[in-house]
Length: 188
View 1 (spheres, rainbow, N blue to C red):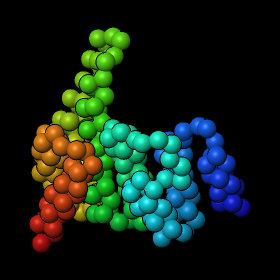
View 2: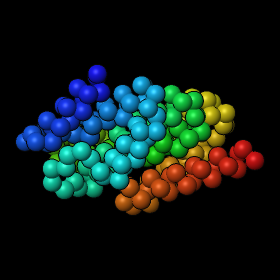
View 3: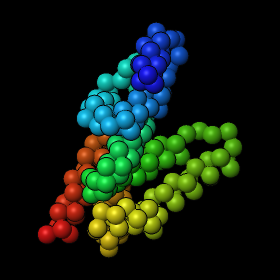
View 4: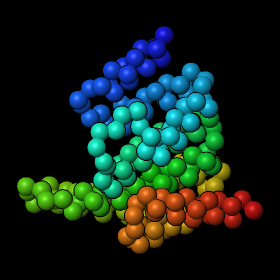
């Protein structure tokens, strides 16, 4: 019954003048996953990753695309953690960290009204892109994936890719491949 109501709400949203963010659409796959419809939920999340949203109002710039990717990949991480697939979840977690740093970098470039606001955003970027902070965030995820001790190596890889200053969407693929390689090497 709740799914029918959610579906009807999506249909109403399609014809609305309001430009809804991806967060509104991420509810459906999360509800489906919680209801045991895991394959359907995963398919919807993958469709969203490809930009196949229920409603598209205008073109999204690279920053908006990266923000959407961050939110979608974070939900994919949550789904995998719920299923206790911690190694797969780790890949998405690393991509989310990378995209978060990329987005903070973009925000820190914005022209703010006050120096304090600009300074605040630069501090957020500096903290989020520190080896120490990323390593701290990775520690519990790596423990669950039975890969403890790889925090610094993975954090360095994320930061190395971040410093290449490439398209953030392409960068997530590099992060995934690099972290996947570290996982394979540490499990063998």
